[in-house]
Length: 101
Image 1 (cartoon, rainbow, N blue to C red):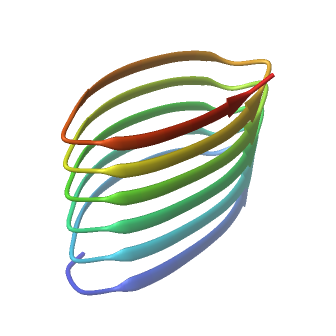
Image 2 (cartoon, rainbow, N blue to C red):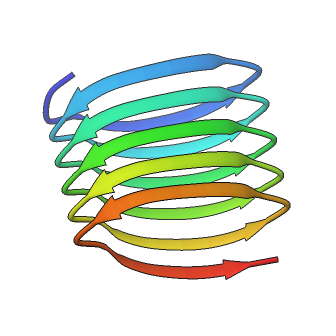
Image 3 (cartoon, one colour):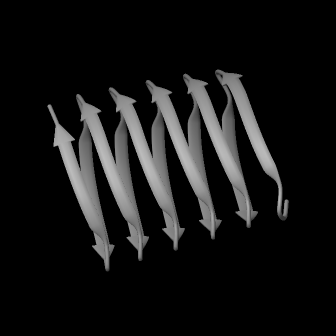
């Protein structure tokens, strides 16, 4: 999709998104999500989800519980408020705020 606003309310679904110029809001449970995006504003509110983000020029806000997250990002402002998480960050030119328990 191009230049599209997408809202997904899904349960027990495997989702793969290849998008450009898209505003995406995901409210998901029991979902495996892979996002490969450019120029996208993403807000994820997830539980019990495995998430892999490979993004460029993206503002990302993650509010997650019991999630394994791997972020490979460039030029991104990231705010992570997480519990029970294994986090690996490989970033360049990024302002990162981590509040982890």
